[in-house]
Image 1: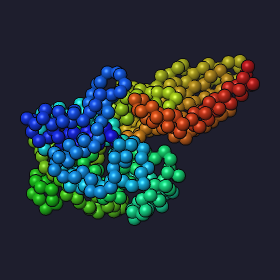
Image 2: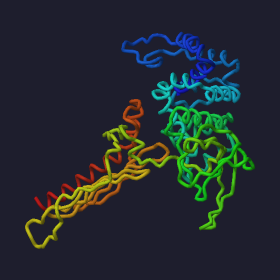
Image 3: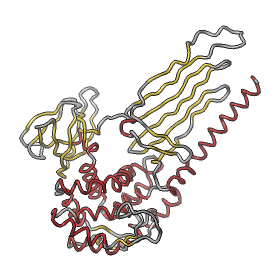
Image 4: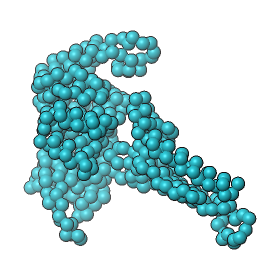
Length: 433
């Protein structure tokens, strides 16, 4: 959160004009002191001590508006896992200023900022967007906590309850809870959404979900002049968001089921020439496969690592021809195949195999939802059949304490797998060796 917030403040300092860039960078750099430890310096942040109070003052001087409306904030906003009993309330007007400045970034300034986004923004922003309150508290048993958040019950009591029942709650979810209390969650959501769409081309691509197509209008209103129509499943790129919300009741012509769709008017481009406003309730994220989205990334479960590659196609390899085994016999011909399967939200691989004495199969399935990856392992052996609980994975370059947390979380499942394999091997040795 510290790096994210400081870069968030740093971006507007560069957005006023190209001539002021160096003028803005110098006072920013002046608030970074040399590290106590040795080692190479690869960026403004790595290895430096940051004078946070002066950075905040610099931002307030630039915008001429307070960042916070009330409350202490130093501990909360620069401690990644803070169960703070009191917290600072952001000034919504400051967030509006930041959003306006990002919307007005020139191409040259965006080019300058892009490396900062790639190294410091991309991962923490996605963690924030994937750990919202509704993402973390998604079970029926969480309804009581969600109701307390909705009613804005006593914050300190709520934190104590969360800490006792959810000690591993992500700091990002705590951030969203505080933003819900100070009333800025929607503004932060739109701000982060804007930053991601401005700096991550992949995140700006959407597909039309309306079977009858999607009308493109001149202005962000339902009664605005129609410029054209984009057919079902066609790709568009979002250029900007209007902030004009819309709620409609949509009835499926085939099933007759009516559902409420919420969204806002966004400006898009289709092809090279058709630009206009559409309702984003009928847009969905691109449908690239699991491996395409995660190509070249390495993830760890705390015990082992796995690197995904989009060059892994769907396939099976026939080990040998599976001629029928005529029993009784000393040995059957060994046969079987290995396989790999790629889908939009999952990737799996395994083997089905007939050895000399019995049939066995095992597979591993990786799943992804809201940027979170987990796996499930399954095996059918000589005497043992099992399917594990979810094994959590995080990027292999995560902080050491995060990797240790995931290791502790996964250890009971990994131990279970080892125990089952040992149990199967002992049965095989007993009966066949």
